[in-house]
Length: 496
Image (cartoon, rainbow, N blue to C red; front, side, top):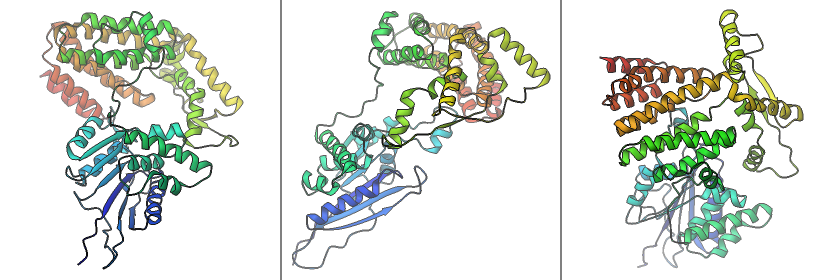
């Protein structure tokens, strides 16, 4: 009687357009070259994040006698040997389906993210907590390997499918050698990039896994520049890298003097902090983050600056995988509103303009869609001209309004840090409501003002910071309901 055939199973979770089908073909080709029996099935999604895209492969040695092996068409929970995911939440999807076994499964995942529609639709930060996926992987998998496969793919000029292939080979998913994989990839210009990505991922996966990088890396020179502004040693460790990035952001947004202002404000918060508890450290780190984002609010000048950065055009060309002889054409769609025009005008002129709009309505040219081709000479010069309004930003109407609001928030933060780290941690998150432009910005400003005047200002005036829970609930309500109904109900309840 013949021995039972050992079947090796591999499951790949990917997104539409990432080359998962090509990866499956490579694996099948290698199996056949090595005389193995193999079967592959796939469930393709219709596009990125609108369908579950998975590829399932089973293979085994061909028996010398007896019937050929019978393979399954779909993976069975807890009975998959190797699982690879091109994106972190795809790995979570595999775990949620029960396909990962702590006795059997080697789980390989990229730490990169392609955010889901549900995440993007949130009014606040709707991103899924990556640390939860990482913790689950460590708990549920027999071996858990994490790599930034998307970064490796970009650095080598290939698709994530090639880096997934290398990562699987690196962890021993295949019963053949590395050379067979390179042979399956083939020859040619595109294949050369795929082989480079494969080899880079192979080496990274074969090395001892050090886990993903969770802390943002500061840009070269940022720490030194921040040090010239006084340094961020007074901030807790988790807030220093955030503050360094905030300093660099403010310098890029306006100038070095504006970045120095950010540094002084962040250090003033640190000086006002009371105890060195973890909650205080979290409040300071979050305040440093929100302060940088607030100080770099988006106006017409900022949008024009970002849209004409050389790095943006280079990134688009890289993402589109364009060759040097191909022409890139980008058309921006702008719809300036009266408030956005007034925001970049000098304070007195901007206030007059808004009064005129309130009396007579906005001029007919405003509110109409405008198409600007930033890859044309005329379009690029137009956007660069708008970007130059940053030179008079300090004299603008919105700058005055934003700085006054920031100072009020900072004063409240200093008082709260000394009196209640819990309230300060909640107050640090209040600027989350301020974002975007047009109606989105107006809704956020309305909610921010309502919460600040109803909860924050009275708490600071009384010196009573027992309402941290109410403040958090109000922020959550404002982020959950764009029509203000939930927030108004929450504020009414808090006032009782």
